[in-house]
Amino acid sequence: MEFYFPTELGERLAFIGAAGTIVFGLLIMLAPGLAMSFLGLQPREPRNQGFSEVRSTGGFYVGCGLSAILLAQDWIYLTLGAAFAFSAFARILSLMSDGANEMRNYLLLVVQIALAFLPLSYVFQLF
Picture 1 (cartoon, rainbow, N blue to C red):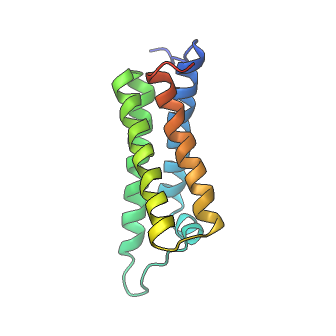
Picture 2 (picture 1 turned 30 degrees about the horizontal axis):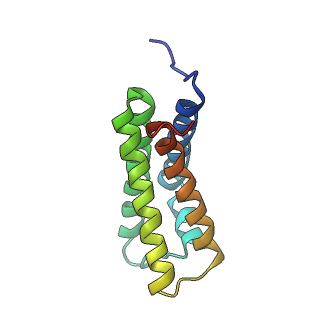
């Protein structure tokens, strides 16, 4: 089995978006404490259920990114891009209604918009 690396610019951008999803997912899955402290979250002391939830979310990101890279289909890239676009929309809603105006939220918004744009630009043939 050969490793497939795209030759077209648009598909390369989608591939990079999926790879970025995998990297962030691995970071969240393997270092949940670091991810939680960056996000300003803390689990309760007697129970560490928060770590399980964060690791599970990281695993979800890894699975979505790997699926997009291994299958390399337009619909998979569309799903990945749409998921990040809705995540970015939810973050914008939070910035407007929850008063969560912190630099960290704006940084994560930019990351989510980039991870949405990269696969969607390939699907809608912007590049």
